[in-house]
Amino acid sequence: MSLSLKEKFKTVSYFITHPSSLRMILSLKESGYLKEEGWFKSFELKQPLDKNDNPIPWFTYPAIEFLKGRLSKEFSVFEYGCGNSTLFFSERIKEIISVETNPEWYNKIKLKLKSNCNLILYDNKPVDYNYEEIIKQFDKKFDIIVIDAIKRNEVMKVAVDYVKSNGVIILDNSDIDEYKPGIEYLIEKGFKKLDFWGIQAGYFNKTCTTIFYKSHNCLDI
Image (cartoon, rainbow, N blue to C red; front, side):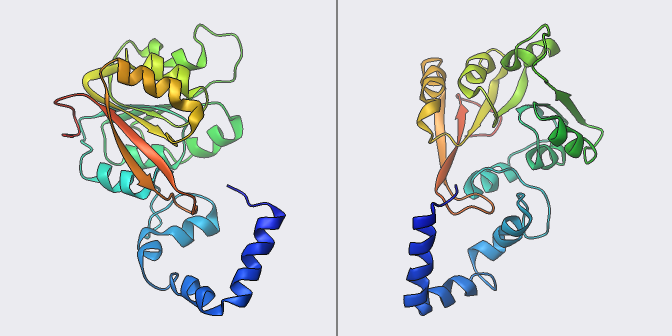
């Protein structure tokens, strides 16, 4: 989230008049939570990485920590929006299928993928399926469906039919009002939600990653 010129000036002025606060902020690069999570490296490189330079999703840190110990090599994942999250999941699950709409980003990520990744480029040309319906062509259900790209409300409505009975749906930036219709639809369909509030790699604004689940789910929630 970018700051206005007025907000930037106000921030700079604050640190000029409160040097102890500036020293405290600078010290966080040497020790503490942000260093341990790799926040500064993510900020500098403009991509989500952990402290060892491994790719992570652009989820909130609490959500990532929760998922790390619960993913299984037996899981199949479908992801709307590829990136470092694709690389993160591919190290921990059986297979991941991801759909991307940006050709440049698609070509960049494709070079980094493992053999258990299937990356699809959706270029909005007339095809058999709309973007949110791409998942239908695989004629299977998935343990996890990740929603972190365009048309999120539409995707949530399709996802309920393609997630396993014990599967989960992950929605990033779930605090955005625009996504309320999709969230309400999932709840109407019997899903419960677990919110993970916090910051993301390289960003300071508070946001939320939500996992939607039912009883006896694959993440043992």
